[in-house]
Image 1 (cartoon, rainbow, N blue to C red):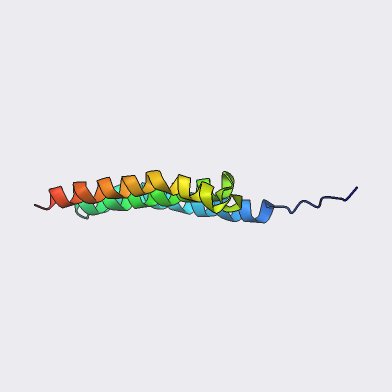
Image 2: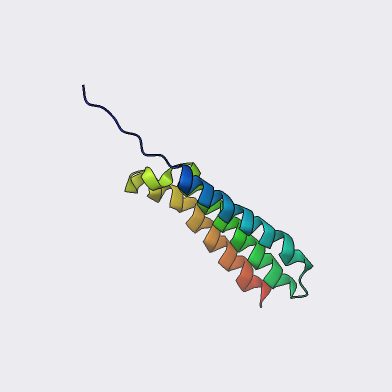
Length: 93
């Protein structure tokens, strides 16, 4: 029988953990800033999407999936982006 060698992802997971922690700290700071509401809202949504991407890509192992599975995961994101653009467009009319 052939031996299967498993590659440890411990270092990568620690890096992603700290990236998520930093993004969380930034999310806590943003509401306290004296900037326009739409900038706060869009910044917080962008950070949340970034954190969701990191969790899905690394902790849910989308980086190891086939291209078809990545495509299936990207379809809801494209629907969200389309809705966000429509909402933003209606806000600035």
